[in-house]
Length: 339
Image (cartoon, rainbow, N blue to C red):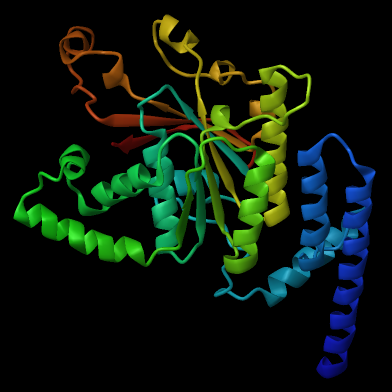
């Protein structure tokens, strides 16, 4: 039976390939002015040949539950392809139920509060658990990202590491860390000017080769909008977040998109971030499944000021509040981390 089923499957794939080739030919002959859109359509046609998911349409609720019960009965505990992705932070995993596949996770903060570091720590831990992580860094070079990971792994000062001023003991820790990190499936792309269509094409190719489990985009406001479109930046950002959510569902992976916060947070007395602070927000907060903010009290209050206002509490140096402001799957709460 398997032999004949493979013949049917192979010939069906070839028929899909012929249809895709015909569709791509039609797209080319249409000669549209939107080149990026045409390329995206062509890539979609080819990707659907590889992708075995059927076209989505209306289904009865009974069918959804039947599929759930069937999957539960036949689930392989060693199969990681459908399992959520651990972040490596116990309280965060407990709050979110780990990173759910198909979710768009917005991680936002003002500059230099640790957004990229937190995201790379999540990527490092996920890869350590056997996941494949893809990182688009539009702000920092791949060398800078790699050095950050190396400093964290070796537990050495990143400034001294960059200046190559480490002692003999620290240098041996760095060499050991290089060995540990080199085996991880973390892939970096540091192309500075990219559209979501560029990213989708690249991550699909990697997904075909390695099956990506986690995608990180650093950061949202640096993504280029599509050319030849009369839209303002807020509309562009809304379209970008919708496309990132589509990638998450299309590839069945969690997407962590880092975002900047507006300066309005600096004008408030308590400096605590809120959803309206999302810069050029548009529909960022409505498209996201999870929105989390990083807040550090020691960035706004000196030790002397803290002692005057909180005489009985220790100064929160390097203590981070990760504020989960939106969680589609569970409670909103604040998690405490150490930077």
